[in-house]
Image 1 (cartoon, rainbow, N blue to C red):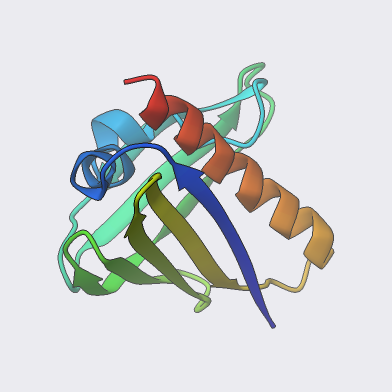
Image 2 (cartoon, rainbow, N blue to C red):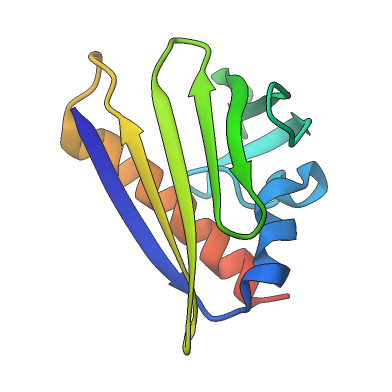
Length: 135
């Protein structure tokens, strides 16, 4: 099953692309709630390149790596990647007169309910919006 989320970011795509793809920025927004953070991010943004982001609770009790490899990239248009567990993710960047709409389409996993997965991914995307628009 595929899950779709989206957000409008009131910035041009050329600007938000950097915030979305560069590890120095990813560490500032890649978490679903204020009691979590992203203490580590590395990314080689090219077809076949790998990425790994560590998401961790601020109290140090929980952490996990979110990792995979890029399978297709269209500068300022889309990013497709495969997670280490085989799930596929596609991110589309569509410019409009208000800014840029980011749409993420991803394969659901089988452990957590669909609503929880959607809410978590949407919270991270909302964090990105807040970060990008504040810059």
